[in-house]
Amino acid sequence: MYWEGEGVTQDRDKGMEFMQIAAECGYVDAQMRLGIAYRRVVQDSKWKQDFKKAAFWLCKAAMKDEHRAGYLLSRLYAKGKGVACDLAKAMQWRYSCPVLD
Image 1 (cartoon, rainbow, N blue to C red):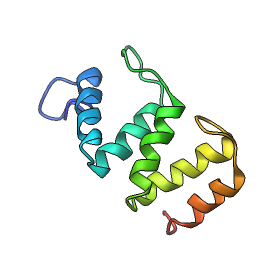
Image 2: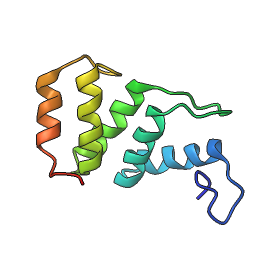
Image 3: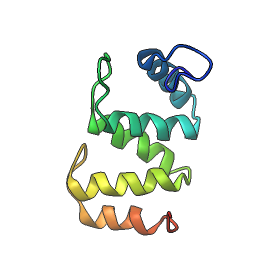
Image 4: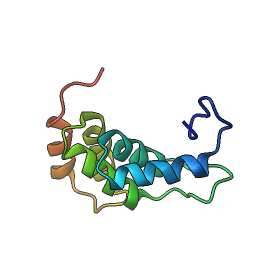
């Protein structure tokens, strides 16, 4: 809600705080969204790009069969961002996901 500004004034900091809480409680969608958010640079926010945290949260979501998270995690492994570059793991995550079109 706060992240997108749906029904409230957009507040990325507050949105990240709520996503963090939901992700820590095990909500898969929040884990994936938090991983995506950490991959990006958040302008004018106390939250900064952090590929290590992105990989952590995307892995949590991917382990619960969130296929988009698995695909994005495969890209981090392929590029060595936030994790050691590991093409075998990149391929494992990429091909464990159905085709995402």
